[in-house]
Amino acid sequence: MAHGTTTLAFMFQGGVMAAADTRSSCSGLVACPASQKILPIHSHLVGLTSGTSADCALWKRILARELRLYQLRHGRRLSTSGAAKLLSHMLHPFKGTELCVAATLCGWDGGEKMNLSGPRLFYVCSDGTRLRGMLFSVGSGSPYAYSILDQGVHWGLTVDEAKSIAREAVYRATYRDAYSGNCVDMYHITSKGWTRRNREDLKEEYYREKERRKHEKTERRDVAFSD
Amino acid sequence: MFKLSEKILLLCVGEAGDTVQFAEYIQKNVQLYKMRNGYELSPSAAANFTRKNLADYLRSRTPYHVNLLLAGYDDTDGPGLYYMDYLSSLAKAPFAAHGYGAYLTLSILDRYYRPDLSRDEAVDLLKKCVEELNKRFILNLPSFTVRLIDKEGIHDLEKLTLGAK
Image (cartoon, rainbow over all chains, first blue to last red; front, top):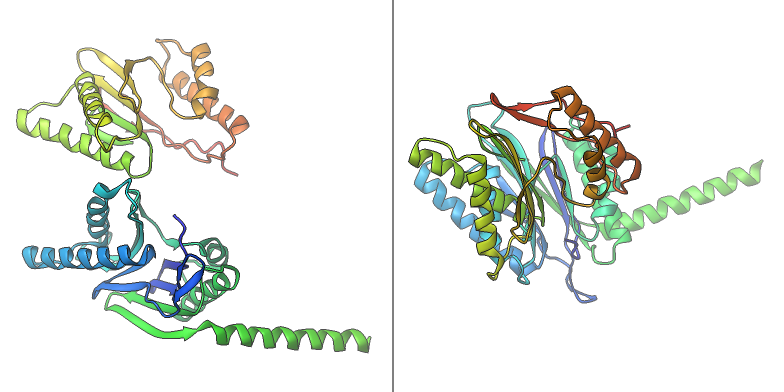
């Protein structure tokens, strides 16, 4: 389901990289240029939100509460897969109503067994979909983000390369999509938990690119005239 | 494809979310029956149970929009295939298909199906259907999972990737 946003997340050798824009739109105008679409749920799980902001914020809090209760009752954290299933089952009774939540859960599962621990990425949607994957992008800007990510994302990326491609994908999406824009938030999830990168205003990047293009054009023109 | 028991598979297509929710509900209930009673439901009983659930939900506020194929092997009756649709109809059939692909494949199955096909002939028939889909179907479906159920249980056969380039 597409709503006015661009959020993306992908898995690589260094963990999970998540990025999102910060524009909240409301029928054609920007309601909030500095909203937070990446919400931490617990130390090793982060959720990206798309859809109705209020619904997403509420259900994230409900999920965080249920996960904390699980942790207290069972003495261990619920896996990302379990958290995604829990959210999916909680949203199912509201299917057919106006509730609109498209969440991407990015987490790191601890544990002794090799194949059960490590980074995990799940997409959960209020129409009942629950998908596991290596790369997801959600929102109206997602096609633009997908095309950048599909070119460069692979398992062997370094952390810096991953950060730069995530940032580039959000930037390109905000350039083309009217409902995405303003700043970019980035979170990196590793075995030690999530770390947040400072919010960056993409306006600067836009002007820098404009300067670069103007520079290239004058260079090319000079070369053409010199021939 | 959902494994209901050692010799029953449920194939479920339809609306996003409904498929997984309904199929997992049936799957867990069939397993619960085994735990409570010590023996597994027969394919025919499982099919009728599934149909009853679909019918109960049909006239409620939240009907499940899913189309199903239930395939199983009964030790007394032999193999059985049950076709169910979202209006909770149930029919036992020698071969079946759901979706737009059915328009293309059912006539091939009508023409070449015989009750005494060998395993290899059956896989070839399936390949014929997939080749036709690759030729005429508007969506590109590069890969198909294939499973076989016989008196020994469920076997995973080789994936059909005739459409992949």
